[in-house]
Structure formats: C-alpha cells, structure tokens
Length: 236
Image 1 (cartoon, rainbow, N blue to C red):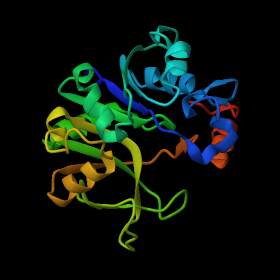
Image 2: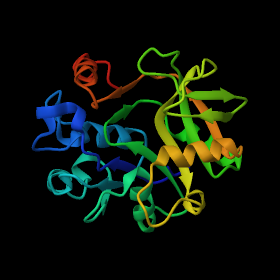
Image 3: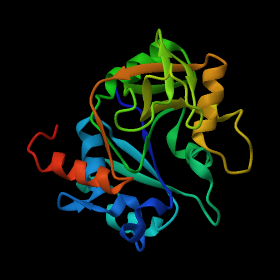
Image 4: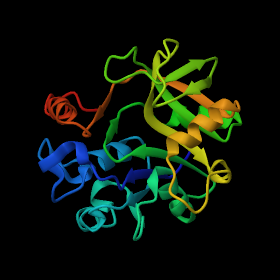
C-alpha cells in the first residue's frame, strides 16, 4: 500500500527557544550534525513516505533553501507558505490542501516520531472516520496527558482542560481527510487542536495507540534528548 502524502506543520514562531531560534526556525536547529528537518525527512523516507508538503511561515525561505526538492533526503518536497499573516496549524493545512489530496498524514515540524506509519494508515481506512489521531500512554511522563482513548476512538481531547481520565497524549501523528476541514472556520486562522476536539465530541475522531517514545525539538531538554538518541546508534 502506498503511504499517503505527509503535511509537516513547520510555520511556528518557536518563541520558547529564545536565542536558538532568533535567526532560524525550529526545523533548522542543528541536532546530531545536521538541521533537524534533515533527520525528520530521512525518517519519513524510511517509513516509506514519498511525498511531503512543508507548511512554512516564519523563516520559511531558509527552510526552502536548505531542503530544496527533498530528493537528497529520499522524498519529494513541495511547499505551502502561510503568506503575509500566520494561518495557525489548521489554516496552514487548509492552505496546503491542493498539494495533499483526499487523505494525508499530519506531523509537526518539531517532532521525531518512530512509530510505523503503514499500520496507522490501515487503521484509518478501516475506521471509516474523517480523521485519526495516534496516541501514546503517557500518564503525564513527558508532558501533560490530554486524551481519553477507548475502543479505538478518541473520547475526549483537550490541550487546556486537565482530566484524571486522560492517560494518553496526542503523539503528533494524525491522518485527516480533506472533508474533515470543511467545517473549520474560514478564512480566519485556526488551531488544528480545536478541530480535533470538535471531531472527538461528535464521535468522528478515530484513535490508534502507538508505543515508540516521541522526541521533539520544541524545548532545550527535548533537543538534548533527541541528540543523545540520534548519536546512540539505536536509530531506526
């Protein structure tokens, strides 16, 4: 089975990282000898991904200059820029729809996710849902848990409201259908998390549990942990 295209949300301002992102986006922070986006694209290629759409914004031209057409990383890369104003994660996806087609994966531009993608795609197709979110049983270990997951569905999802029933966390790997964006606000910027929360409330958000720890470069601690992993010889 051919893997769906992947949208990478790489347009954020990265204000939490201070001087590290004063003159570059998170995608270009150096980790284990190369900018992070190089590791991310190579990982996607190992998963069998052929097409990637980079949703870029702040310092987006630097990303385009470094990545080019993506072939040296093993994938074909296209670009969907925000334009003059930030569109939010949901708005950036809607802007990218002409490049993505009917179904597509979504990952964040600061995430390094080792969970195999083909089983996720198969679960999405079997669910007959407009969207699927991968979750990891987190129990507040790496960040605050934000998902109630049961029987293959996301029962509730919130990045703001704490709930003791939330034992899982949004892994950062999802699949959306183009139709899932149809009810989103237009043309104002909007957050993808709000769309996921609305889909969960109406029983339309499938869930898939993964077990490989996620890594990220959204914090100094995350960068250090990923660097240690990538230089450990365990990369797969």
